Image 1 (cartoon, rainbow, N blue to C red):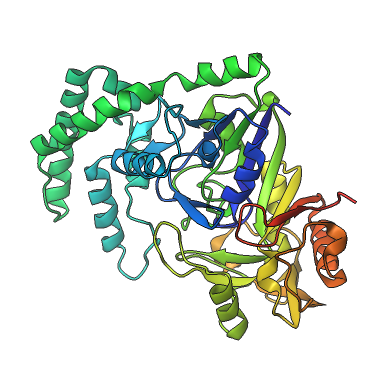
Image 2 (tube, helix red, strand yellow):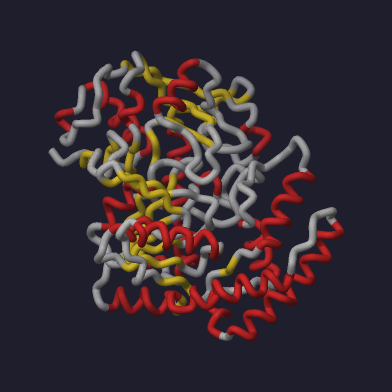
Amino acid sequence: MPVTVVVGAQWGDEGKAKVIDLLSKEHTFVVRYQGGHNAGHTVVVDGDKYALQLVPSGVLYEHVIPVIANGVVVDLPTLFSEVDMLESRGISCSELKVSSRAHLIFPWHQAHDAIAEAMRGDDKIGTTLKGIGPAYADKARRVGIRAGDVHDPERFAALIRDRAKAENKLIAEAGGEPLDVEDMVIQFGEMGARLKPYVCDTISLLHNGLANSAHVLLEGAQATFLDLDHGTYPYVTSSNPTAGGACAGTGLGPRHIDRVVGITKAYTTRVGAGPFVTELFDEDGETLGRVGKEFGTVTGRARRCGWLDVVMLRYAVRLNSLTELSLTKLDILDGFETVKICTGYSYRGEEITEYPDRYDVLEEIEPVYIELPGWGTALTEKREPSHLPQEAQDFIRVVEEHVGIPVRVVGVGAERDDYLVWGSE
């Protein structure tokens, strides 16, 4: 399969990095196609944790060429902090490629992010304040500065100086502190020189790789229900994490893609504000958060927790043309006497069969659950489907029945090898 896309099927934090790490074994290129350093992917190898925000998860394999593609917005301090961290731990980043078309994030983006969020008062979006949205806004306004601009240092400096002066006026008008323009020119000039060896035409790189029978893995950040067009707007990210975004974000056409893997936890979590149909405010919700260690990789914020919602997953299957699911963190349900799966919605007493397209409707939705017996035993050591308790097997089959596609991988622990291939027997 020449091109595989990995997509979060919920609100992010589904364990994409672990599945990407698993799939990277059989791919030459692992490509990040959207988002910025507002998303964190964590891989655990022999007890060592690698928390990545920009560098693709496949970097942990020597044979992989990690690519930051054109759909990503790149924060240079974060990128180089990750590169330094990885190389200090023996992971080479010499093969890292950054698209010349990828837009860069600057301090004025973060300043605008903070000002806009503060102005919302009690109606905050829950942004990470990393400058992601303003950077994408500049891209849409056609005033952004791209990675390829570092090839001409004088022009790069002039672009920064001009934009910084213009943005300082807007920041001052909004009551913010103006930025030191010349200090920024010097700082980013130095980082631009460091970035230059990594920058290339990644579109040609990937197409040439495909022409030479390379396998390509496209890695999304965030997830389906944070998609700018298809998520729970306005509580969404500023890009398109869905599979369609993988084409625009890499320059690869849809005919190249023949496998789309959706990642879902065995329950549901969300960071920040926005509707959440199955959210729990009781002891079960607290247990999911505590046992699942549900804290954001980037922000450290506690995640909201709830039961698995297969109505959401069916919608994710449609939007992304998912071919299979990877079901992660099934082991977090080990201690529950019973577990629930939301299989339907009720709106003002009437059954809803489609995922609502309106935020105000979502806020009034009541979940319709089925309740299944728990398995009461630890799953972490399980490596074959037949080794799972019957109750755990039944849980997986209920998910498959309701979403209409097969589960292929089941995660049963935090370590790299804590998984089993479902349906292998």
